[in-house]
Image (tube, rainbow, N blue to C red):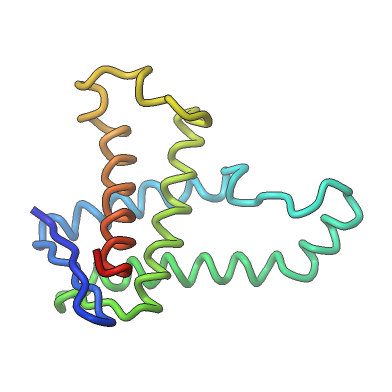
Length: 149
């Protein structure tokens, strides 16, 4: 079973090869959902003129940043080396996992609190809900490792 723990400024992600492959498959399956996600391209301004200017000035940088975060996540998982994340890499993982988690939740129509109650325990253990729970668990464990909990 995967374990995530903090050691000072390093976060260690202990996953075996099977778990790495499963996480890589999740990233590869969910990543295309980002392109179709309303969440992935949130509006900064309600006024159209301001929004267009914001997208012109910052849109490409935001996309590049998200892609870099996803590549950091993917690169660490695809490596055979032990996963020991710096604080910067941990933040990249957190941003990438959050983007994937939100895109998946949007695809599933989960946009309000209390959504968990709509599904049976069996549904929560099967894809795609189990995938959402796994992404959330990894994200939560990374936050705890960063905070030293």
